Every structure is written in structure tokens, then in C-alpha cells.
Length: 417
Ligand SMILES: NC(=O)C1=CN([C@@H]2O[C@H](COP(=O)(O)OP(=O)(O)OC[C@H]3O[C@@H](n4cnc5c(N)ncnc54)[C@H](O)[C@@H]3O)[C@@H](O)[C@H]2O)C=CC1
Image (cartoon, protein in one colour):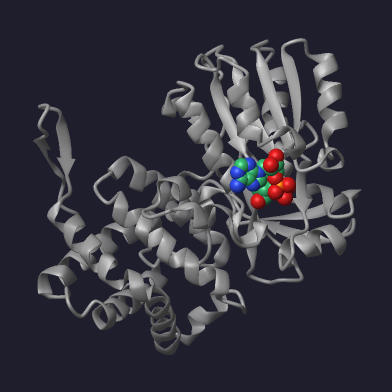
């Protein structure tokens, strides 16, 4: 196992955790390779596929997105290396999620060897026997958590589900609402998301939040916006038709309602980020909680508020629900929330573009909402080392836009796996 952290006291006498010796060595390596991260990643995959060509089949034909994910996941793990609760959850999710790619325990050693091979080559200055031992310990611990999580999950759930498209509703020229029928019961909680593969882009998986709470008929609903260069989203919006069969990975995400309390909810949904927010509203309604729920629904222009009718219908039905549409002409969505309130007594839920979620979290914290009451799916991104504004907005929405798990959810994106 990895060494545990120790703690010391700062000037005020407060305890601050000191990183373990292994964490210090691992982070030193990552700092050294940061400027040549692209090269390290390319070399890692080259080593992996040369040594074990069969593993290439587990990855998508185009590896561009994959490359970034590997490093992000590594940084996330290194940053939290001494936080065993976080690692258990993060890596457990990763291990279970890798089942749908066909990853098995026997694949892990090859990945570890390729990782160390790439680090040895590019971390020349800091690499020594002690560093290598720290990396081997870290990788062994990480991969074991993933392997164990996958094997426990095998007894409980399939590696993936097949889901037939039963309806396809084009709401705007680039947003479709898809209803799917899974081939076996698909247990999930309102606010969670799935990972999805289309028949047109094999092994390319994307995340989509469920737009409804679990339904008695077992059908699932997704909102998909076609984004430029978004292969999967374009296919789902413009090509998918009833009868097409998609593959779904297991549900994930912790943006769920705690029914043990009766705290009110404050929800921010930007663009298609309104999908999980609608699921949360349905969830509160089904539990008959009658807690106050305020939904701020943001879009660029009025006609981009494609699900406004549904929300207004819900508002009419449920007196505890207030819906506040916000277009960009009125200013940024998080600002509209700041100007109202107070929200300090609410549980907050945010879904939408990463930039919106980031700004929303800042606004809510600034307005006195405690961090532990703020839920969203960008945990990895918003706690990632060096995640600056560039990481927040750029790139295609399909690649940059959905969920923290994003950074984690492709075969061996972790390697560290
Ligand atoms: N669970 C989640 O967090 C979910 C996230 N999404 C993501 O939400 C995004 C939706 O995209 P679109 O519909 O094109 O939304 P959009 O780009 O049209 O923006 C929607 C809202 O967010 C605001 N916004 C956008 N960027 C912002 C920034 N940097 N700072 C502050 N506010 C900002 C806009 O002003 C608007 O009110 C996609 O990236 C999708 O992947 C979608 C579903 C669920």
C-alpha cells in the first residue's frame, strides 16, 4: 500500500496534512513531465500497443480525446493520492466503468509497464530507484482498487446494456430528445448520467445525463445537442432513428437528492444541463417532499430554452416549484442567481457547460452556501491541478462539456489504472 500522510501544525496551530513520501515523489515526476505531457502520452500508447497489440482494439480509432484523459486522470489521482476515501470512490467508478470497454484484470500489468516506461524516458532529471518504487506502489494500489471494484460489480450488473431508440424528437435544429428502452432493467437515481456508444462510432463513448427520474415503464430519456466536431452528438441528433440500438455503460454521478432532509433545492441548468435538473424536480415530486425548489434555466436566447414548456407545466402542477428562465441578454446565469436569494439554506445543484458550473460554484460559495451543499458533475475538473479558465470553456462541448467522470471514462485513460 501507499504510505499514509502525516500532519503538522501551521502558524495558527491548525493541523495541515503533509503529503506522504510516495505522493511527493509521484508529484515531482508529474511536475517534470508536465511541459512534455503530449509526448509522454504518445510514447505511453506507442509502448502499450507495440508490446500488446491486442489492447489497441479496446480504444477508439481516433485517440485525440483519449490522450488528454489519461493525463487528467493521472493528475487527479496524484493530487489526491493520500485521500483514500476519494481514491476508493474515483477509482472504483473507473474500474466499474472500464468493464464496458472489455478491460479485464490481465490488462493492468501491461498498462503499468508502459506507464513506467514512458515516465523513465521523460522524467530523466528526477527519476531514480526510489521514485520508481513509489510509482510501482502507487500503480499497484490504484489498479487493485479498480480490479476489485470491477470484480464486485460483475456479480451485480452487466458490463453494458443495449438500449433501443423508441422515439426521437428534434426540439430545435440541433437538440434532440431521445427515449430509449434498455434490454434489461437499468437501475439509476435521478441526477445521474450514463456513458453511451453509438453503432456509428464504435468505442467512442460520451456522457449524457438522464432527463427524467426512473420511470415505471423503465424507459430512459436523454437530451442531446449536436456540437461542431461532436461525432457522437451529431449522430444522435441527425442520424439516430427509432429502432437503432445504442450501448449504455453503468450509471454514475453523485448529483442526487438527499431525501433524508427537507432542505430546499436551488438548481442551475444551463442549456442541455437542464436535463438532470428536470429529473431532480421529478424526483422531489415523486417523494412528495414539498420542499421549495428554484430552477434557474439559462440559455443564450429565448428560443434556446427548448424545454421551457415542460418546466412551466411542472411549475403549474407543483406549488413548491419556481422556474426562472435567464437568457444572455439578462446577463450570465450565475449572476442572476447572485442577485436573488438568499440561498444559504439550500442544497445547490449545477449542470451545464463547465464554465457555467465553475462560475456558479464561485457565486454560491461567495453568497455563503457551504461547499458540501453544492453538487455538480465536474468534481475532477474543478479540483484538478492547474485547471484554469482555459480548461473551463474551450473545445467542443462534446469533448469538454460533460461531467467530471469524463476525464476518467475511457479505457485505460488512467493507466494509472
Ligand atoms: N450534468 C451536467 O453537468 C450536464 C452538462 N451538460 C453540458 O452542458 C453544456 C450545454 O451546452 P449548451 O446547451 O450549448 O449550453 P450553452 O453554451 O448554450 O450555455 C447554456 C447556459 O450556460 C451559460 N454559460 C455558458 N458558458 C458559460 C461560462 N463560461 N460562464 C458562465 N455561464 C456560461 C450561458 O450563458 C447559458 O445561460 C454541454 O457542454 C453539455 O455537455 C449537459 C447535460 C448535463
